[in-house]
Amino acid sequence: MSRISALAPDQWDIRLVEATRPDQATPLEQGLTRYFAHCPDQALGLMQFGGALKRNRQLSERLVELVRLRIAFFNQCRSCMAIRYRDAVADGVDEAAVCSLERPQEAENLSAAEKAAIRYGELMATDHLSIDDAVYADLRQHFSESEIVELGMTCAFFVGFGRLAATWHMVEELPGAFQTAATIAPWGQEKIEVR
Image (cartoon, rainbow, N blue to C red):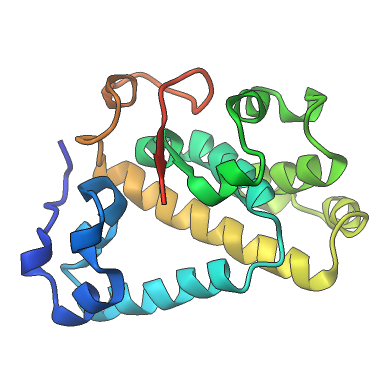
């Protein structure tokens, strides 16, 4: 059970309703907005930032999804691990790619660029102070300066809000495996595909 109450769309500020069209989404697709609706002004600002990261993305959907799922594992954000975004699935994220996240640096189905980005996301989630000149030199082999900045902002978004979501324990709509108390992983589990 969630530790914060989810507000139904009929309790949302009209600006949130207009920005998200919750009547066209399942409760799971309404996601964090159901909780952020307690603070509509902050929610709208966050949606603008998240939307800007998505709309103006230079990085591939596949790469961002793989990084997101690896960070979700370290955050132990169950809702983050259970979800697969359709645009990422269309860009080549299949369960073989997700399973490779168990040991990404050994995976044969990940590119060198994906491994570098996943490693960066992993360090952001586990030991950000170990990100040194060598890590950035590795990123520069695969990404432009603006792509590295985008990756950093995206990872910061995933780390921070994934940790918040994990503490809220939003598991009601998730497959049974994601509702248990044990440490879980996004690989080898049921998943839910959303917009």
